[in-house]
Length: 336
Image (cartoon, rainbow, N blue to C red; front, side, top):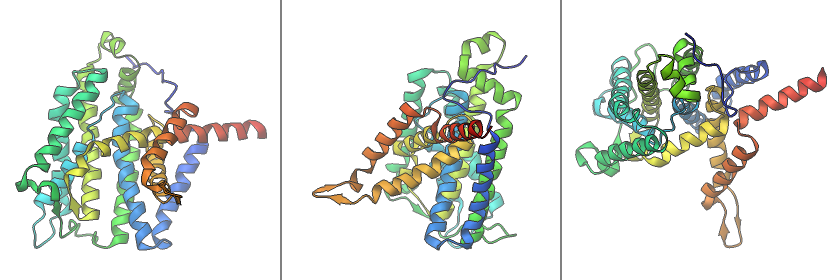
C-alpha cells in the first residue's frame, strides 16, 4: 500500500538535472575552497556547512513531514553540551566515543519530547515544541553546575586517531564529508517507503490513518531522526568553536533554521543547503550595510532579512531552488 504521491505547491521533491549539476559544481567549489580562501573565510564556510546540516534536519520535519517546530535548536545545543561535558580538561576524548554520545543524547531528548508533542497538531504542536525548548534553555541558563549563562569552553577537539581534527583544513573536510553523507542519507530516506509515508502525512494525515498507516509512530521516528541529525550539527559546532552556551538552544536559533528552509526551498534537502548558505551570506551582507545619516542600516539587519523573506515567500514560494529550477526550465524552453 503506497503513500500518496501528491506534493504541495511549495515543495520540490524531484530535482531537475540542471539543479543536480549546480549541486555538483557547488560540491567541487566547497572541496577546492580551503586551498584558496583565508583561514577566516574557511572557518565561515565551515560554519555554513554545519548550519546546512541543521537546516536539513529541520527540513525533514518541516518540509517532508509538515511539522513546524520552534524548538529544534534544543537538540543542536544538547549535543554541543554533551561534547563539552564528556571532554576532559587535560586531553581530547575519542571521536568514536563522543560523537555517538552527543548524537545519541540529542536523539534521546527528541524521542522523549517527541513522544509528548507529536500527539498535538497545528498551532498546538508549534507552541508545545517552543515551550519544551524554552524549558531546556532555562535548565542550562539558570544552572551554574551546567555552565550557566556563561557557557562552557572545550580545550580540545575530539581525537579521531586516523586524522587530526585540530588541523583546520582536516576539520573542514570532515564537516564536508558529514554534510554530503547527511544529504545522501536524507535523499534516500525521502524516496523510501518511510519517506513517502511522511510525505503522505504532510498532505493528508487523516487519509493516511484511514489507509492503515501508523501516523504517530512515523512522526515520532521522523522527530527523533531530525533531533539526532540536529545533534550532529551541534556536535560539529561545539568542536569548531570550542564553546557552548544556552544561546545555542534559543528561540532565535530555531527561527533561523526555519528561515533557512523557507529561503532555500522545502522538502528536498538541497534547498536547505542553499538556504543555509544564502541566509548566512545575507546576514553578513545586511550587517555590513553603511550608515545613512543618523540611521544605522546594518544594526537593523533583522528588518531587512525579514522583508527579504516575506518578498521571497510572496513571489517565489518554492524558494531560491524554485527560482533556479524555473530559470533553467525557461532557458531550456527557449533553446528547444
